[in-house]
Length: 167
Image 1 (tube, rainbow, N blue to C red):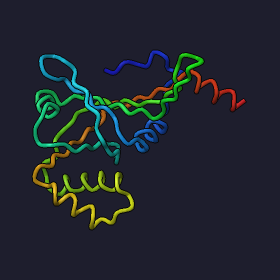
Image 2 (cartoon, one colour; image 1 turned 60 degrees about the vertical axis):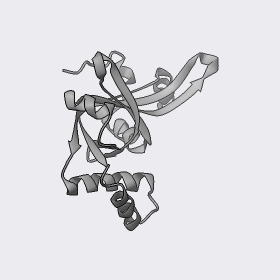
Image 3 (cartoon, rainbow, N blue to C red; image 1 turned 180 degrees about the vertical axis):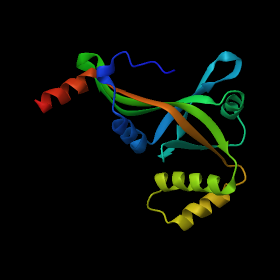
Image 4 (cartoon, rainbow, N blue to C red; image 1 turned 90 degrees about the vertical axis):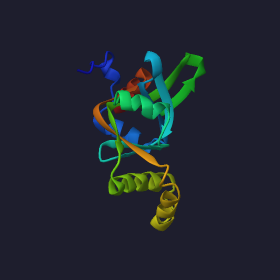
């Protein structure tokens, strides 16, 4: 169903993909937008239990698109170092392909919102997290992307550097 990576020597391991997804602060969600145009939107997220969670308003282009087709991809760039003298970048990135659903149950929605709060305000106590969630509860929508396929890739220069270091 999913294509094999053409330059498979540059493919990241599942553990490396998980590390990038865990460390990232934002990514780009791509959905099938209006009139056949792709719609890609940057989002904050949390990766937990092999799933991605996002928050948003209860209406808008993204939700309209997902209600028509729940398939989406989410890309996170873990490294992007421009090397001007070589006309390249040393990059690492991950793309998760899957299905997105709106979380409607209050307990599940609160748990996902709490994961997001803990990620972006790790030093705040849960009482503060819950107060913030309560303040924005009515307009809050939480989405879950369950990956069907996760793939990651890095620049060939990073592969070569690692091979050289390993001897």
